[in-house]
Length: 411
Image (cartoon, rainbow, N blue to C red):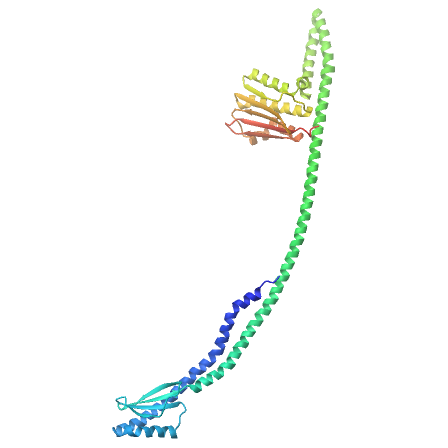
């Protein structure tokens, strides 16, 4: 790719080179011409002074007749003491009347003057033609010298600039090659990063599936154990209690075993509730949430409202997680929020969305969640099922808890 540096240099240097040729070609002839003209003028002035001295002496000795003899004196001086610089001589008296004239002055000349005292003055024309010819003779070689210097100054930078331009082109080619290699490496790196991200996403998806499956299996196991305790041990204990009631009606000694059986039945019920909310198996998630809200409203006097779909067909793990989060959120609002109104909204779409909002005093989620087991437990439940839990609150602005859980991926 041409860079055009040579053309730029030529355009910029041409006026300088022309000026160089002009200066070199004209400086020496001009200097010679000035010096030669000064020399000729000095010689002409010498001739004028010599004539002025001779004619001045005659004018002093013969005040009238010197005018008539002055042409002879001028001719005598020019004949026997010729001076090439003195091209013409003119003598004037005190009234500016010409008394002697050797002839016409050449085209190129200057005049030099010398006074005859009070009698008049002498003028000598100095010819400059020889000086001009000599100067013109010097101009040709010096102009040739200027052209030679200009040619050298024209060629040397162009050669150096051509080498530099070639070097720049080589560097540009190397840079483009490096850029292509870098783009190839970048594309390869992007491919590796994309593969790595896809691998991490696949691992994350499998981890979420495994976690959700583990939660589902755990929930199923807990419910199975709860049902076994409820249906097996619970029924046996209930039968024993009925037998002890009949025995206690006849003998007072049976009252103590009856109390112990009641205590065991209560503990079994508590264990069943911990293993899995039995109310979910009995009435389902929607009615279980309704009972939860009604019980809280009756016991605390709060205005608790529920919005939920009429029919909910969800996996047991989703039901349990949703119920536990709602239970913990309502419990926290009752104990800590000092609220008057609590709203609970459940919606189903691509994801399950549960929102619990109160008009209480609010709090700083970052400060409370560090040491709050309830909030941390709700978040862990959501993350184990591949969901999320967001808490929006500030002092004096109430609290909103939003739970989102995936529906399709949950086993």
